[in-house]
Length: 92
Image (cartoon, rainbow, N blue to C red; front, side, top):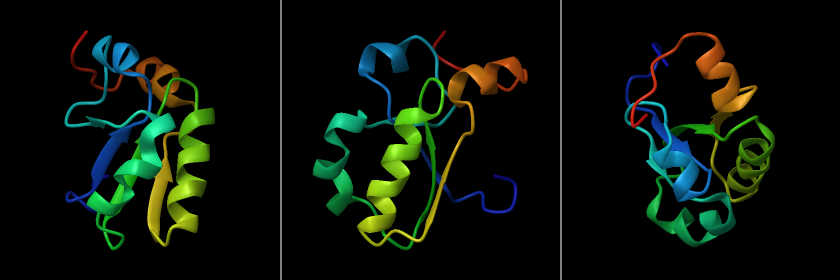
């Protein structure tokens, strides 16, 4: 994140999960609707995906990579790991 401050954080959880706390600056695109939003995203951008434990974000990363996105990363362990590491959370 420090290497590329222009990256986009996408929280792929449901809106109610996102509202319960998310990474500051993250936008919410539910993983079940991700493919509907791909055209509005820059395939040359850098993306960090997050869900609760890492499963949905890993699946979303694969979808984005298959669609031609090159710089897509996911938070290993999701929000659970993020919070356990004491990293900032907003909307709590």
